[in-house]
Length: 199
Image (cartoon, rainbow, N blue to C red; front, side, top):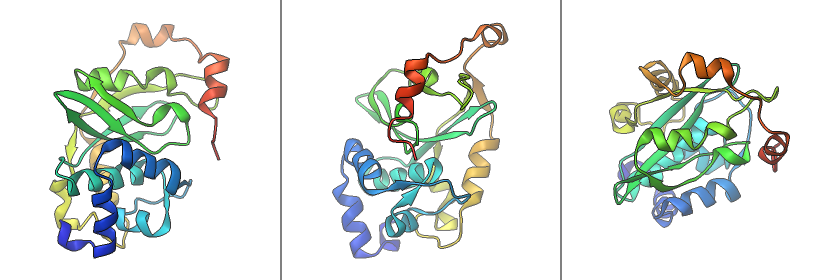
């Protein structure tokens, strides 16, 4: 994959040699936007714009360049948007990198024993504009090398095939139907905190 990037792009990605550095780049150098697109990491680098899916693809590419498998996971919600994570493991524990307009839906340290534990760390922070807690299911990790034939890292066209695939594969429920019926609205303070820095 590395040979597809320009020397400048590759230098940037190699400099992001820790998950926390990738997250800092997404937080500080890449603006969030609401455009309907699914752009490649090359376009994220060039435009310095990304939503959650594009941020996850960028993070996965940076992980891959630095020797970590490019894995993404889809979090599926009701009455809300899905959210994509780039996931990684350190010392047998799961962590995640993410771009979001909500403060609580971003980075997770690699301290979670299972993927489900990692996903559940997002539950309280995953809410819609009406204050409903909306997270319902999650996908298995998808290795983006399965899409190398699309040149997903450097494509100039949108790579919708990735988003469509990850959203349509089987997902695992996070709540039983009985628990779903008893769910509470998000706390007002957490709702306010989640919007810090939102655009």
